Length: 214
Image 1 (cartoon, rainbow, N blue to C red):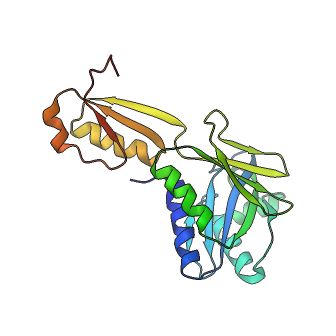
Image 2 (image 1 turned 45 degrees about the horizontal axis):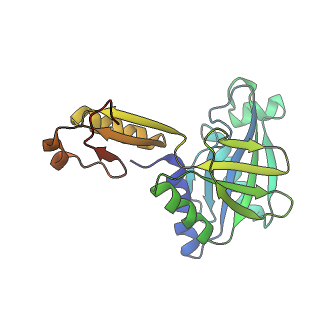
């Protein structure tokens, strides 16, 4: 199982490689109740395909229609649920509000760099300058996974937490797959070498150290 962020970035890169126009929406800030936290991603393809989510589904449809009509070529911020009527129309729970940063993507190469880092379980920070649309990649710091100040949007890709699983049995495999989907770095530890042949969870390192030594 891969993380939601990795799936979204991989889909966006694939659409770009196929010559499609793609936008990436990031939840920059929320107020009140919000189904998705700041830093959540949604990739939007011009043909109507979506990957990821920024709400419970209502905002996605509204955003898709808007992008298909306007086809913006620059970074923009969009707020949803600013008024009570809009919140009811879009189905935002409990009067919640959210602010999205929407950026057009024109090249898959920077996304491939993110994918390589995530596959290597190496945190990598992506910084977007809202004024210029410039994107830069930096060494990751798991202590600060997301930041937004109205000028720059800074998001960490890759694992922010590490999970050590003692024992390489069947339940451990299920737990490891679930943790990978939540973007943990996962290490399984089992000194019983006979379990090595049965361990098949891509992206999870199996160590045969004694647990206290590891």
